[in-house]
Amino acid sequence: MNQETETVITDHGISVVNLTKSYGDTVLFEDITFTVEQGEFMVIVGPSGCGKSSLMRVIAGIEEHGPGRVMVDGRDVTDAHPGDRSLSMVFQDYALYPHMSVESNLAFGLRARRVPSGEVRRRVEETARIVGLSDQLKKKPGQLSGGQRQRVALGRAMIQEPRAFLMDEPLSNLDAALRVQMRAELMEFHQRVGGTVLYVTHDQVEAMTMGDRVAVMNKGRFEQVGTPEEVYSRPVNEYVATFLGSPRMNVLDAQVVQRNGAVELELLGLSLPLPAVDTALPVGPVRVGLRPEALALVDDGSGRAVSGQVEYVENLGNEKIVHLRADGHDTALVARVSPRPIAINDRAAVSIDVERVHVFAPDGTAIWHGPRA
Image (tube, rainbow, N blue to C red; front, top):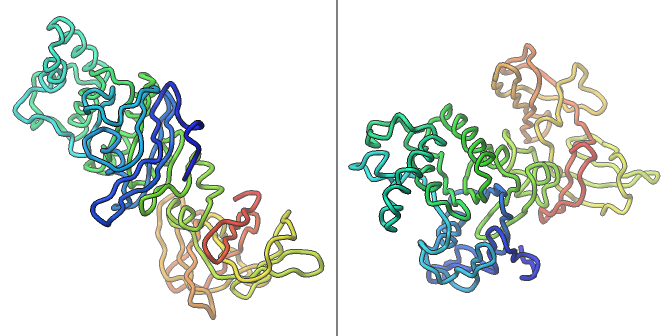
């Protein structure tokens, strides 16, 4: 994702300009350019090994890099010491001092900077109040729950009064229920404090629920940057489309044909007219993306429905995820449906909502999205 330098450097927030990092002949990321606006909560999401955590550590100044610049509030901090960047980082493993109390962990950075003791006391008390730890100040990290330790790490970052916060997979060590709770607390913290946040995660749920904007990263580059709604509903390629969404998008080989001035998709033995589509859509082989919610169980397997045998059913209470093997095709379709009696080995049929179809070129580039996709 390349942009002109003039379009990304701002007087407020974090700007990364043409940043590159390599280990020997291995390029971790290359020519990365983006801006996190002041007060924005931006999430970088991608699989393990895509370079997102290395990018975060380079921005923080704790890893070296190749060409490129890092700007904080319009100030070039590319060569600045980590402590001089006006950034605070929250790590995956909390990085607390186990032999120190919560109070001492919070105060450590201030005391190292020789902040007056009265100011240290005031900021510790205020920070502990904000993160809900006022009654835990005398305890050591080993006496706290995982969520409480994460609050200490957050408070230790916040007490420095930084220009921006960098958060590297801060919730990955928590159990599922606590992650949900901490997501809500982080969002409440962001709204209350109003700081700029750059957040790294491999968890798409965190990305979609927390980010004002989301950058989807793959193999050292940004595939797409946009609001959660944009990257989910209008993915720029098949990678983004299949990375976001759970269960993942169904992707099928298909053909685009034109009949009597209308554009149709041929897939799984069906001919599906595409609504409101430009007839200039290229005729020929394509890849078709169908999110599970674009498929619905129907009683009649004729017409625009695909029949098959149910291979697996995930009962989630308020909905079911049905895995259907289409007749005559080596294709498993995954549909998200409302609760109804259905079981493994049942015969079933699903209809396709053509207004929710995504069409990709053979190379994976998106070429059309349905009006309700």
